[in-house]
Amino acid sequence: MLVYLASMAATQKITIEVPTALLDEARAATGEGVTATVREGLQALVSRRAQLGLLKLGGRVKVTLDLDTLREDR
Picture 1 (spheres, helix red, strand yellow):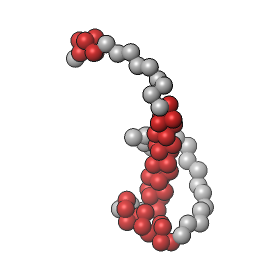
Picture 2 (cartoon, rainbow, N blue to C red):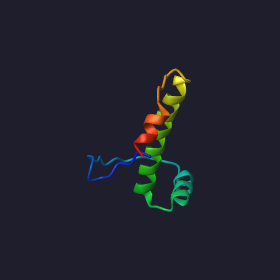
Picture 3 (cartoon, rainbow, N blue to C red):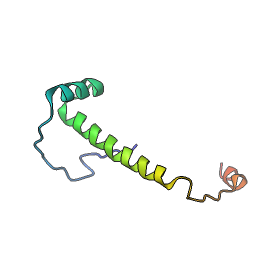
Picture 4 (cartoon, rainbow, N blue to C red):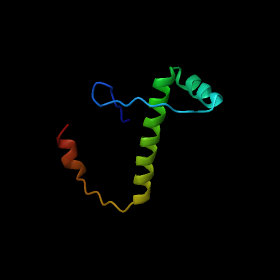
């Protein structure tokens, strides 16, 4: 999971209009306030897009791993 911490990245103050019911439902799901809920939603969107990008590769990435070599590192 990709996590951005305010101390690690620049922040930007924004004003958005969202349906009250949607925000209330999202806040109930996270158990957090508005800012934390919006941050989690944005992080989920970025993560989902990355997952979709990986799915588009559809097995076209060839991975060559030697399990014995990997086990030696343990």
